[in-house]
Image 1 (cartoon, rainbow, N blue to C red):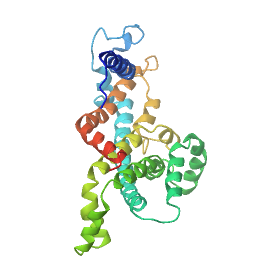
Image 2: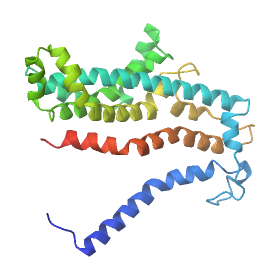
Image 3: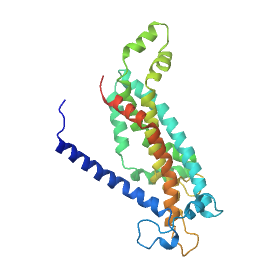
Image 4: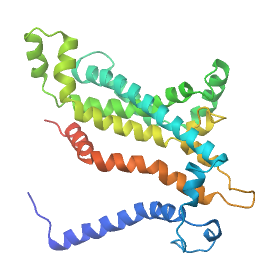
Length: 282
């Protein structure tokens, strides 16, 4: 294995620092804004002169429009994202297993279609979906968002799990069947436990995709009955007509970002393990 020279190591270190600063600067800026007083929002200072939790109280504790709007949207985001993730992972596990293990006509077409769906621009199907949902009664409902979310989460889930299932030795399933297990039992008791890292990684990725969606959330909802957090942020207003909602929006953005950051920090080893095991052919 070729080792990097000292100059190359310093070069990569500089590139890494630049990329990290570029990626983290907007997050730090929003974090600082979330602790500013309304009077400091136009001051031009990066850090607040007086740190306050007023913006967080406005969306979490104070009785008002902002709290009602944010908490209902937070419940919607959690529920819809979890359900969409569960359905996507279950369907993707079965589909990926069939693609990886079985030889049937059109297998490549299935993968190609999944890839095509994943790169298809979402905005182009929002209008016909809006009209269809209004006609069949799914507009502004949880189910009306869960179904479109599957178009975002299923393709990446199928591709990730199909690559992972290919790495599991076929002999393990055959050995289970020789011992008397049915195909379903061999899949459930021999294959699924070994595929747990890949399934877990896929579930996290699918959850992040559903959690961060804005286009479907803003287009297919009209009230707080199903509107998720990314869409609800567009409806934030200040405490009065003369006050900008920048601080409250920043606080809400930090609150909804914290769960994602915690999940990544807690399970970063499992995420990397699941992605690398599915990417390297054994």
